[in-house]
Image (cartoon, one colour):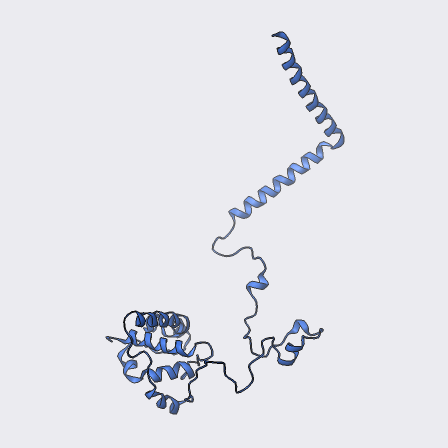
Length: 234
């Protein structure tokens, strides 16, 4: 029993002696001021992180990663552009020739299945559009609901900013003097046919710009269908 006890004591004494030797060696190799400086640096970093977290405004973005991607220029793909960063370097051949890497289609060509309105802009064209055939006049049930769902989504993306939620007006632009009429009422419903609404969306009217460049032909008719649903019962 005494031998076992002595062995345990000897083991712990040996460990203590090794620890003592390590401390003595560390003190000889690295003066105390290094340990103090390291501790102060770590403490300052921790204090800075804590202070930054406590003072952070969680209502806005404080740190932005790769801001050049977040704030890149919103250029249209087929418009002529100037590239100042290439002023002292030769541009690639397609960009040098066209001003853009995405070349426009040859003049006078159309893609397969493309549809367009053969009625010009202006008052005469608007009058001629009165008799355009409305493609969704006879739809009902699930098909009609699908058309209205698509029309509602397009209305929110393209029309709501000027004509208000569900076409009731009071849109943000009216605060800056831009006139945009209320659409969901009997006056507008009786003033224009479905074909004339389609013409207005295609070519624009008064301060409203044309939407043909970014709203597909068939989608314009779906907006008209949704607009008619807003006017029902008015």
